Length: 224
Image 1 (spheres, helix red, strand yellow):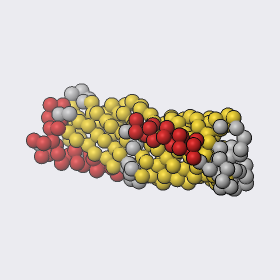
Image 2 (cartoon, one colour):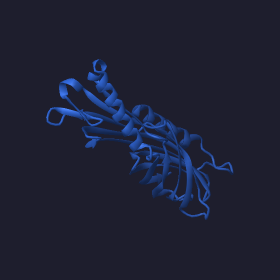
Image 3 (cartoon, one colour):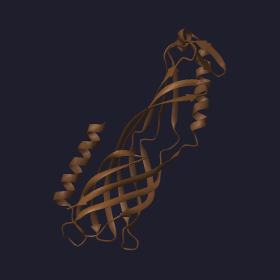
Image 4 (cartoon, rainbow, N blue to C red):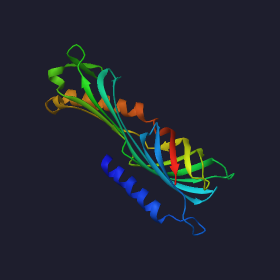
């Protein structure tokens, strides 16, 4: 999936560079660069639609991050994967660098977690099971694949070529996170299966408020 995203961005760069035109029919300014922030890191390409007024961008973000966490009494080795591609439109209301932004992200962000036994046991729904009874324990959290975005930021929209800084501050609506917990031992243990479902329900309830993802992204681009 990451390679597909990168290919899409590179293809878009070529299209913008060869065929993007401004509203008056002249060749629009094209910029390309890198951004980093809460969406991860990756390339950004864009072009001017109307100088000092409107522009459009493709933004790709990627990050793999490992961490440890505890959820409802179970200790996990976690792995966060950020993988998103955004199509953004900018409006510069005062013909300056300040902009208001709206758009959509293809959102493939997710968490994968592997449970680790504590003193040889797992606890689900307040009930303790041995590691042999529970078997392999994993959890997974995913989000809506299409996520609307709204925000503001700064980015030069003039005809000036050269190096420019860019920034974005906003929120991405990714829907209610979808959580699942599995324990291989539950296939032959109905009580364990019931307690795992209860732990999953509790995890889902804990995550229901995390529908809005904060976006803070900084970068530098070169305008040709």
